[in-house]
Image 1 (tube, helix red, strand yellow):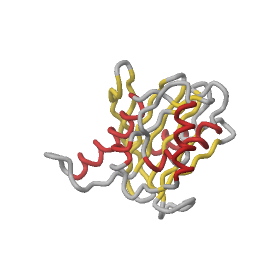
Image 2 (cartoon, helix red, strand yellow; image 1 turned 60 degrees about the vertical axis):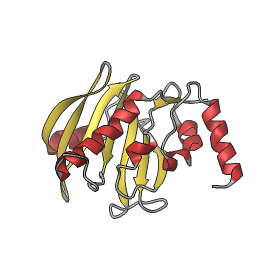
Image 3 (cartoon, one colour; image 1 turned 180 degrees about the horizontal axis):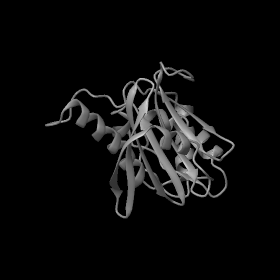
Image 4 (tube, helix red, strand yellow; image 1 turned 180 degrees about the vertical axis):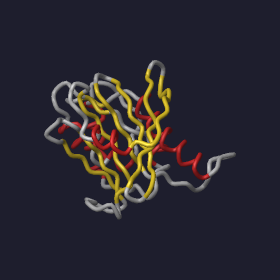
Length: 189
């Protein structure tokens, strides 16, 4: 990474209203973009490096804001990924009073749901959905008067100690969400 890019990232981090833990490398590269796209009053919680390392081939990140004020960071195996072939997941934040863009599809395709504790006082749902390529899981919770959603393709190998491939994949998704729920949020400058 060039020195100017490192200085730009350091300035973005220093200008945040609250100190954030070291976000994952792909996120650091777009930290200023995330901060610039946050609608007034919104914050974004970011995953740590160790959490993103549990996502299969997640080397690049992009950010977009939708018409419903959803701030969505997509993780891909190629720059500016727009197809399912390179998409490795996303995490998003939406104001709690706005219907989340996934609400209808969650209701239509849900095949399982279990409550999970992500942080002290923060309980979310681990939801299994029926997808085009088979079942997949998301974690959804409310915090900071916002709805957060994590949907990532976990890297099942190496297996976490004492776990099956499915248990290891589930734990990596939970670790990703927990890292977001427990770190201080990034705020607009």
